[in-house]
Length: 65
Ligand code: SF4
Image (cartoon, rainbow, N blue to C red; front, side):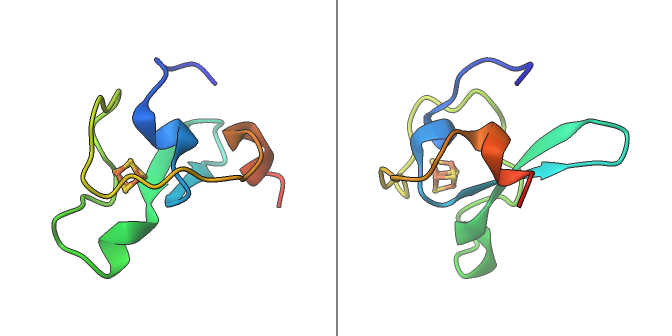
């Protein structure tokens, strides 16, 4: 991961999108149901009212699924 750590990294609502050219984007799943949350939050994010700790693996692992 080539970006600063963000609160989103530990949030259960984040999803890592990896483009065909290797770029990574952090997608906020909460944006689907709540317009307060941007699809692609500005990173790094220091605080967020929607944060919920997740027990998911490291973000890099998401892209392999
Ligand atoms: S809810 Fe907040 S902390 Fe969680 S992924 Fe979305 S923007 Fe990031």
